[in-house]
Length: 352
Image (tube, rainbow, N blue to C red; front, side, top):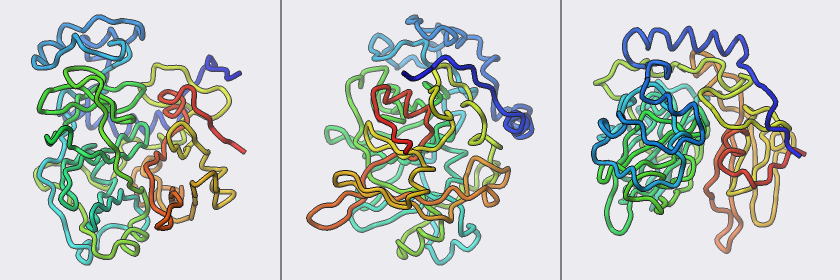
């Protein structure tokens, strides 16, 4: 039996990190603490099913009569709608010209129809969503720092291309996105529409990797690298969540925490199964059914030190499936244990 009632607290290091980095953002208006969002106080009650009045004012085009979740499960992350601005017109640099990106910094690598693109977490941390096209396919590249989930979706449904932005809301500490065509709300972890006209639809995920820039440029020598936008004042390369992945509990999480494992332990999730990163690191390679999981050293944590390139080594994870054509990458999440439990409550987590 998993004890989900054990109280957890942030480490002093994590609290100091949040205060040091987020307070300047508060002063400049880039971030507002949830306590200032009076309209979202309903989120304190996880069973509430009443739509906060100001949600309707802010989201007049969202159909709140359709939902698959309790409204009280959703809380403000601080910023308003599009307060964390998605990148809609991404600019890219040829790999040979990306000389300022440190070798071990984490990047998201996506390959579609023979084209590869690299999205540094130093940029995604501050924007969370990039609407793009790779190999002729419209995609949405997403990253939620609070769950450490980098997920790429096919942005096409029924022949239509959807583009996405940030709602400023969280559910289970995970990014809630919205599509600009219907203003329905979508859960980033699963790709499910949870509120609005698109309820019942799920975005297909596209295989991707979080790996070091050095590994990415060796593996995909013809890739393009996302360039930092020049029209914002975000401090790219810095981490606004100092000490987050060594905290004792997640930030802005109202659900039950697992009692048999540290909530902030990284796990590698494939569907409803997951393996802890320490287990994979110890073994180096795990083969289960047709899955092959591997770990190698050499990637900075994006959620450790103030400067991402100085983060501790959390290693590179690869998840592939054996097939007639050999090993091919499969969709997976390198996330935290609390997030896996929250979104896969009946899943299996292997610790040894």
